[in-house]
Image 1 (cartoon, rainbow, N blue to C red):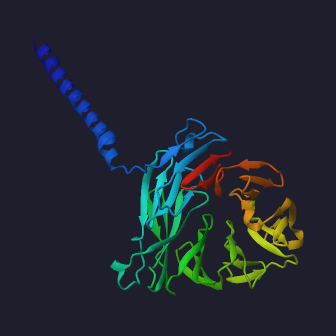
Image 2: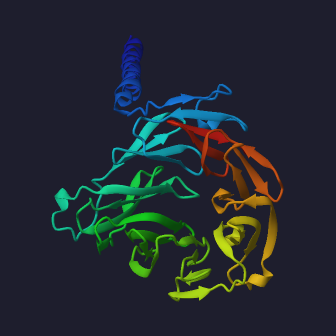
Image 3: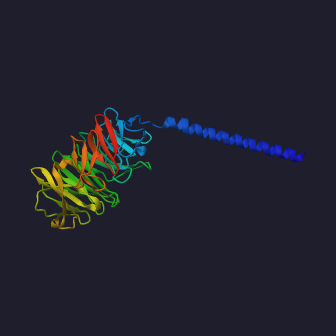
Length: 370
């Protein structure tokens, strides 16, 4: 009898344990599928794959495209290096969207500011003036500026989608002319050095440098039309402005090193392994592209024929260093010198390792080519 009562008690204990486990499971199921789902801010982008049944970028097959309708009033958009995230600017807010889940994962607005030298910080409603994805990770770098009519202040920050961390660069650029804003940022994740082009007047810009310790330094003033590209492996950037036909800024020595070139060339970008790319101009068109390292004499650089005359604005350099010429009417990118063609729809916006991003009115088109 005692043994029977013992087993009855054990049976009751196990029954209550089982009920408790079932209750906890149902509670977790409710939190995950109902309560948390209410908390998630759906992006509600109209996402349509018009060529196969894929849903989101990760399932997109080679040669297929994904078409997204962006909200009215969107100023600009950019897709991360792996195609998983979209950032777009609307109403002075950067919305970041997971393109596989069609979910907003973060919003950056003008209230972000870490400047400690603003007298009336609470009323400082910053204006987002620039943003772009880093070329090898899901991190967005962006810049804010002071509103029109106030003393110029420019502030940089990054947002890492995967960790959810925002990093502000405390030494802001301040006491600038009113309306000053960052118009281009060159960032090497290998050296953790940033060069920022700040527009300080209609025809002029200042270049600033942030080192790995977030310390800021003024580099030089130049014309607004300066073309410059940061090398990824060293603290140098190659540039071309009205004063210098072609030159290198050496960040370690803080000096300008000219690259002697006899030809009329224009700087096009940086290829694989920090190879510098320039195009030889003939009546504003490029027929030959030269490429080489900054420590080589220009006479030692190699060259390739473009196949047909092409305008500098129609030369596209992919993140992996391939060179293409763009034909906006045919909607193609033709690789130089192989002649291989990539097709896209609408107006070309950017190219990543696997995708061509283009726009068609209010639609963003992501085409997988690799």
